[in-house]
Image (spheres, one colour):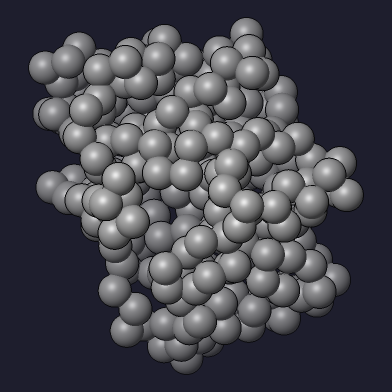
Length: 269
């Protein structure tokens, strides 16, 4: 069965509506995500998972014009959206990427896929929410799971945050133990085998995602430093922000959402 990246996208962001199609260096943000993910050599395919709400028609239109595969499903039950999308494309391994990460790095996707396959895991990621510690910049987030694990979560998860954030059911009860500086493994009470890939040194305070106007300004500035390119690596971005620390001040005051934050509209359903 195939290794498929499913890119979660919607127009209805609460802090920056329509953000996934905002212009960055002359192209919609979603284009940059798709382009960069497509360079991951171990993937067999990419699918955009938008919602069935009419507000996401522009995403479907963008995908149709650009020749990108698009699935549309539940607006608030994102776990159901991912599961049914994975069913549609016969995915054996699912790589979850969100469309607000235009600096996502294909080499990290490949690295985590190798780790996932070599260790016979149910779930692997390069970031987990508290009480775990994030050590990669926000915006390089990758989650990988087997279809069997996703299907079990789809059947069993019953909390709003588990449905909206897709994969918490797989890792939230895991107790992880470090085996070296960058690898922590564990198995939770639900039996899922979990890997957290860390980075040394800790870069978890860097914010490279797009959720606010300040974030968008930051990312536009980054792209402007690599004119005509969409293949620059995350390490090149790291060198850029370390050489030009004023760039990180653009969105330094933005508060990152936590795992238990869910869409207020979902609470009314």
